[in-house]
Length: 223
Image (cartoon, rainbow, N blue to C red; front, top):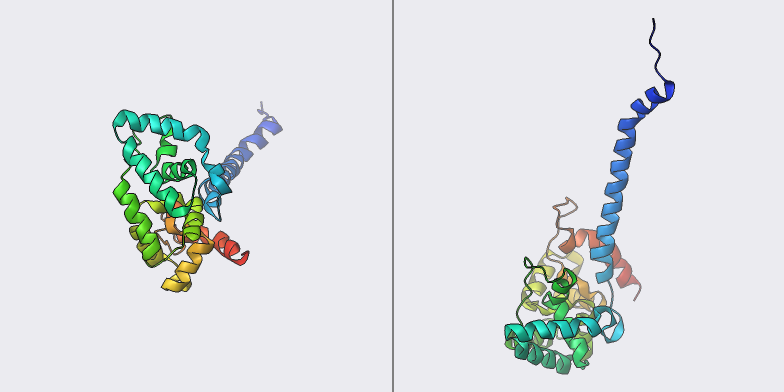
């Protein structure tokens, strides 16, 4: 006899590849949105005042304890004191900026993972970084430096290399020293950008100018 096929089963079998394809597209889109929100959005504009975004009340004591165990607490405290003085910050907020800059807050966030090693504090390097911000091409005042480091703590680590890489890869409209300085004052996170894929994605979105440009322009236009 003729074998009948349940119509719903047949329809489902035909729809399965399309459903799977659409589901994969939705998952991919959601993942892209999450990456943009997690890595790009929070870095645009200024961080909240007085270091609230660093969670310093809980992070700093744990970092101090770890540094005391490794014998580098003195270097940390000297670095924090120099940063506090240069930017007119409370000491704890300065330590919060150092925690972000050197990767200590990330290390704590992943439960002190052995594969992730934060940078050891170095007071001399901190002084040199602060001097570069003050006397280098950016020529930042104490207040300007405070705003820049609140918004982009990672800029404190090797600022000369960060400045050169960011400016060299910036869109042409921002490559002159004057235009780039103005951009840094309005959107400090650009100091963390060091790559420009030219809209041919190279899976380096976290440090690439292209995915950041729309929000950068919005931030600039809004100030």
